[in-house]
Image 1 (tube, rainbow, N blue to C red):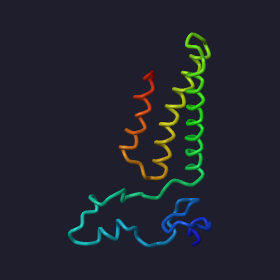
Image 2 (image 1 turned 90 degrees about the horizontal axis):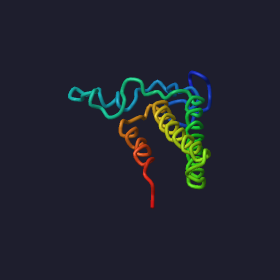
Image 3 (image 1 turned 120 degrees about the vertical axis):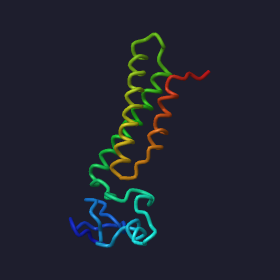
Length: 138
């Protein structure tokens, strides 16, 4: 199928993977279900107003940022484990670990918001890294 807006070849049945525009003029499943007299559109599952995801380059940027922060977190954690606690390098690795944790949470939230699939529970699970960051094993 081709996108009506940008003309790109799309694989998904609902939205263009490049610009995020609807592929066809058909109403969404939530709108089709809300046509009945006893249906309540405000109770329909998922977002009903603007479900179009952000453009693909923005989603890719957030995904790459998320991967970069996860790599940064891994490097920081390895550095914390393998440097003496009294050295300046250890303090730098702790700071890099915190930067990786906070960046991971930030890019995870941004990525999910860009996909228009964000749920509040996801932010709670992402914060689990913060709760376990100060804990030492052993």
